[in-house]
Image (cartoon, rainbow, N blue to C red; front, side, top):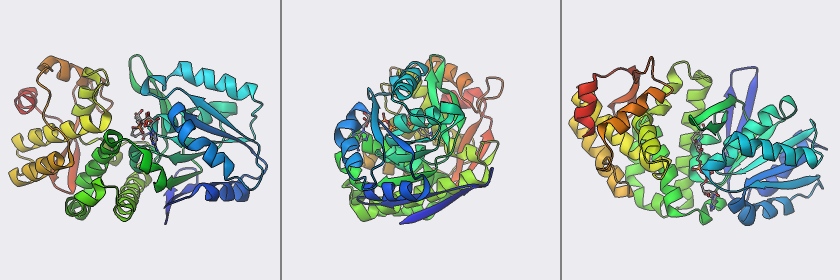
Length: 357
Ligand SMILES: NC(=O)c1ccc[n+]([C@@H]2O[C@H](COP(=O)([O-])OP(=O)(O)OC[C@H]3O[C@@H](n4cnc5c(N)ncnc54)[C@H](O)[C@@H]3O)[C@@H](O)[C@H]2O)c1
């Protein structure tokens, strides 16, 4: 299955291919579009063991390729590790005629993409996401970045990949908490814009949680299509793309307050519930939708309440670092109903507190 994603900036266009056993197709693509380039296979230490050699061994065109890896983990999405990798790549003789395959989760895609954006002022890169989160979210849309001690993703660029290959087979080794991590983003995507998609998730919950390939193909295809449409309308997030941040104002605050011990997707699930409570208390979202979403998140295995140990100040003080905040005042993306959202909503602080605790 192939989705053609066109980004209407600088005549960019790229394809997202979804399927099983796609590694040979990646080399075919490279042979057709980037013949004679040297290939950096960039991955973290976990994916290196699982898939890097496998990918390298499917090259029937004798590309010059090298596996370059970094220790797995969000803390390595940093300028320090970026520089270390750049030194390794330079020392390995990769020049401006090189291309990178970013093979792995969102950390690998964000870090590898940002290295590609700046290496010799930019070399092409291909996203080969291996976590559900990276498949449905981070590999599409061209945001690449590293974290700074002051906050997540603060140093980065908009840099679109040349192509995205989503090989569903790689999901077979993904731990369940990482799978749920990605499912949180899938649910978010459905809720903001596509009621029928949300209904599909509800109707097929058990199959999805068992990673039935047909259901996975469907949810990844739909999530990528939606993200592609949103990005096509607003690549640089000046307006409409903000809806993708639904659940994230509070979700990011929780991630940060927990010092990233609560995984992104789990924090987003809590964020969805609490932002829905805000929308309900503000008279924007109806009670039935609030409860339907809550029940569904619970059935998927998410705990949607704010852990008691967090104080009002711990959460609210984080809002000023939210990228959507204006002069420290948060701008929420809120649901009007399942499948319909509004962005740039300001909410009275007392109503936020009432909804959170
Ligand atoms: N660029 C964007 O638009 C965007 C959007 C959402 C999230 N992100 C970023 O994505 C990152 C999170 O991505 P993530 O959740 O994929 O994290 P990750 O890349 O750290 O992957 C999670 C863990 O799963 C392991 N892993 C990866 N694939 C595997 C597989 N097939 N089998 C077994 N283990 C595997 C990794 O080694 C890692 O330990 C964050 O840094 C976040 O900021 C970016």
